[in-house]
Length: 361
Image (cartoon, rainbow, N blue to C red; front, side, top):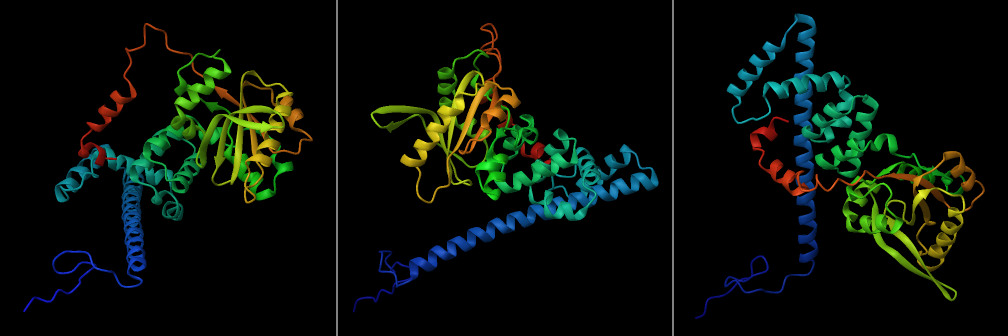
């Protein structure tokens, strides 16, 4: 008499597939999502507890230094004793204890630590301490990191490019052309200036060279533009009547839910540029815009601009438009090319850092 085969978990005893019961796939998909979400919450909880622990250690050291006159040697001794007790932990070096003290000094309010800065990894907080002096700016970068999920390297890039100072710096007419919630978000989305040093081209580069460079380095350009931009294309054709026109750069912004038209100008901003941009916005809204999309936004990105001239050019216009500058660094002289480390070289150096060294942060 043959053995009876009973299906288990979608397969019978012999391992061959069997029909899954109704609703099984939906349940499996739901369970997978719940497990992933729980893992993320657990990781965030562990990180939060670690940062709060470091803050409390730093606060106690700070308090005793003020009350008992502890010096740096006491911190060295404390580090040695903690590492002896917890040899598996890489976070109790003298250097890291000093970071904890600075961290507690920078954030005296536990509620702020718990709600904001404990939501980002310790290494991010160390970079904020090292690179940002003002508390308001540190808090802004911490919140943006939580909001956008920036890695440590991306956070450092934004700090070094002075994103806080540049954010919302473009000259716009958004207040008069967009409803209040979207106008504020759109204004915060655009910057001034945009730093395009990753292109490695000379200050006097022509518009087409800049455009092609941006397309070649689109990942870096998207990083400079900020969170939410999706690249649609360059020299995007628009057929209007019997003529064809081409947009320099076209993006779609996922949070604003609209197209963003960018016109590049290698020279100084001129008021007549707004007429061409107005034309492109009208065409994009008629030919490309989905009924659920919001009105398209236009940006003139130029080498130089006078704020008052830009404000006059925007006054009275009905399409949402903005004017920003870009900055280029001069190309390296030929005799220096090849003598500096490449990005790949630097990445290789970083990868060689031991886990123990990384753990100290």
